[in-house]
Amino acid sequence: MTPQFRRLLTTILLALTAGFAGVGLGKLVFEQSDRQPALHEVIHEELRLTPEQLTRIEGLEADFRVRRQARESEMRAANSELAAAIRDEHADSPRVTAAIGKFHHAMGQLQTDMIQHVFAMRDVLTPEQLETFDETVISALTADSR
Image (cartoon, rainbow, N blue to C red; front, side, top):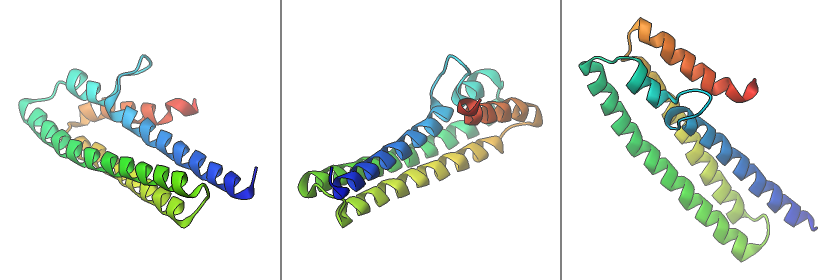
């Protein structure tokens, strides 16, 4: 195995690892799990939102959905660029590095957007609702470390 191929393989593995980290955060907000309810489920089924809270939360969710789709589109485009660079160059090149950088940037922005979304939803809740909300967030973020 050549040193260039090893670097390319390492780069690809790092990109995949970063992608899996982003998926984990996405699961926090959107996916149902046997271990614990997803944050979305807790908000809509357990917190007993008032009509005003529900309207505000739904507006925040709609705004975030647009941002999330844009970031996911950026990540898909970066992965396409990475695939083309690997196909064309078969080496860890500036094109490969640039595509990975674009992917990491988009994924980092998605994570930032998601955390901002969580805090925006938190601002809508009452102190009593915050207890359940915060427990769900903390539990989801630490689930794999237990």
